[in-house]
Amino acid sequence: MSEDIVPLIELLADRAGVSVDATRLDGLVRRMLDDWAILLPGLDPDEEP
Amino acid sequence: MTLAQLSAAIARRDLSPVEITAACLRDIAALDGRLNSFITVTAERALEDARRAESEIMTGRYRGPLHGVPIALKDIFTTRGIRTTCGSGVLRDWVPDTDADVVRRLIDAGVVLLGKLNMSEFAYGAIHPEFGPPRNPWDERRFAGGSSSGSAAAVAAGLCYGSVGTDTGGSIRGPASFCGIVGLKPTYGAVSRTGVIPLSWSLDHVGPMARTVEDARLLFDVIREDTPGATKEVQSLRIGAVRPEVQPDIAARVDAALELLAPRVREIEEVALPHLDQIIAAWWTICLAEAAAYHQLLLAERPGDYGAPVRERLQAGLMVPAVQYLQARRVRRRVRRMFAGIFERVDVLVLPATLTDAPTLEAAVSGGWEAMRDRIGLLAPFNLTGGPAVSVPCGFTAGGLPVGLQIAGPVWGDRTVLALASVFEEAAGVWRQRPPLSAPGVLAVGQQR
Image (tube, rainbow over all chains, first blue to last red; front, side, top):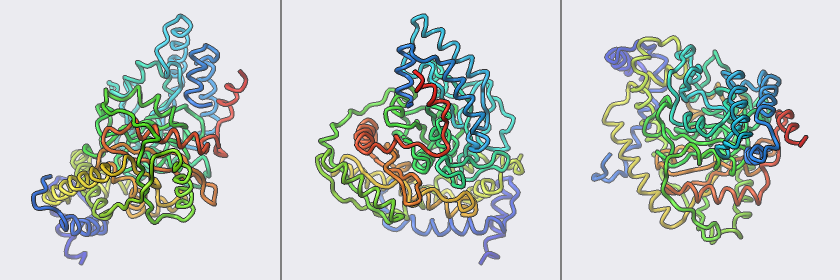
């Protein structure tokens, strides 16, 4: 699966003007994806940021 | 000798700020090669401050409880004319031309500034190789916590009488717990962040670190803005006991602390903190995005000046989509409502500060991001709520390492949290124990009188 997200990491970093070793960020970004999966459940639709 | 005891002796003119400062500088020279708690020692400036304080006090111009008291600051506060590194190679040569608001308040109160203290790089959980890790005075092979690690180590070892740190996900309370001192994260906004290099604007808090609750209160009273909130009587307090799964000897110390508190408060009821995984996920998402936003330009221009772990965390933060940042902010609102509901039933929460005692330096470094996630688990929720939380020493593990008891309250409940911490501290008496690596010189000056 890391092959799937490395190009996206490179693209986003490039747009941010930062050069990265995308393979080293793979684990961190994957952990963030796990976190985002649990943010939404249980949130009241009316809850504002 | 505590800050409060020293302060009283200085006010009575029984102790000389110059003599005490010289003793601190001798102790720093003798011990800090092992502790590595200071990044910059401002010896000349300290002696100048001390001479000025002494002259003012001797001529009847006493400024208050911090006058002539030697302290040191986490190297995250800008200090005019003094290098401010934030523990990073990026700022290794930066000399600001202004003081942070907190620094100005302390200078106006007449403190003696001994120097700037070591810390995790940009307060982001990893040590930059140029500065190396501070060591825990209870066991030099152990981690002093992060990110206000130098502050905790220096105060615990008696190299200074107090410090001011910052806390984004537990960076005051974690090191305080690991090093056996008191660390207060006040209510968000109680202390100005102007002149503090940010990690995460909406999660950063500034607060005191000291040997005792009274010492922390003396520092807090100088650095805080005008803050609302009355002190509730301790005997009227309803305590919510939170008993998460932690290292067994830490759980035992916290249970014993609650038993000690029971006759001193109105009641204790069990409270569960739900959704901790979601809380930590929201904390990380907010912190990653805000830190990356602050550092984006520097990351593009000077990536090689960051240590690798912090550079990678900041780069990863650039990947956080706006939608997920907003979802995390929505979770934060939910968390605040949830805690507001809890604080209608109880006045304060009592829980362990950390899941484990201080890990070895090796384990802390090799554990990386996951280890940091574990360390903030019981601390970061109160950065999301913005309410006050203090870590106060409550005993030792089987291995002889300090355990911190965390007392948390509702927004602007700072004085109540400190009042309960003070009652506990007095009853437990743990603060009197000193670590194996501590400064005899400072104590010796006090004991001579």
